[in-house]
Length: 388
Image (tube, rainbow, N blue to C red; front, side, top):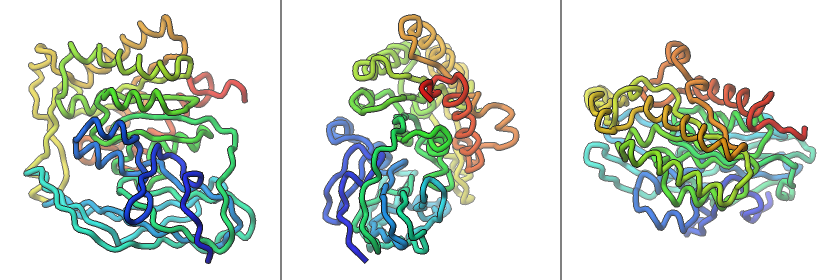
């Protein structure tokens, strides 16, 4: 086995690589952005490598990757499954693996405290690959912070050259991050990217799609051919702002993105259906009764009457986003809007309900990904490849 240096040229989907005591830690927000917010939720989300993958051109039949993941344990909640590493060979699924090893982060949702315990490095090993020159991708677990320690193969490895694919830069909440998807290549953005034939850079940040200026600047400064922003649910979850602040904040966010991408197709997506908050404001809280029974569920702690005072609901957010995009599009023909209920609406909820009240399951992710690809990348969609 040859030891392959872990270099930036082998890693796709990360905006920055931090050198650690163990190896490389992929980040999905750059250091300058991370320095402007001390929120532990954001730090956790951006360090989880959703959409980050190793992309190798090789004739190796065996590839090994040593990593140090961070496992999350929630006090009182059911154990979380180990993160999944997905293998693609020439773009087709070719296997998956998981690691039991790694650090452990124990989180008490009741007190907000967290305790970190170090653990050992583990190895994922993929064997029996075709003995031909091929493109091999190893997608890292979308929901586990993962330090890359070492890479080995039984033949030389080179970076996958530019395949001429357009780069799709997407920002959203935990659903875009991949909450409750089965694996990193089956989050809805990864599925949509595969169907659309594009290279994904996923800035879905669980609990952290909050119209932060540093996120807008990150989108502004990241090269992309296509951009989408899925906004709303986290603003309701956190009860972060009122209607008066929401509209100007959306305008400011879009203004910043447009500073770096004045003519790039830009799609604003409103929230998918979530009955919990359709007409009831946040904040969103844990259902402690369900937690005591070993189940994870959420509740809306707001009062529908508070809408009169400017509290946000998903219905209010959708209405405002549609208005803002309609008015801006008069002078910005590359700006588009998609109602999130076209991705997951009432009929979908009846068939594929949200298990915890907020997040779709694996089947829900597949449906959203397929719908997005059909609405955005195909036909006359805003992301259709006019040059194809």
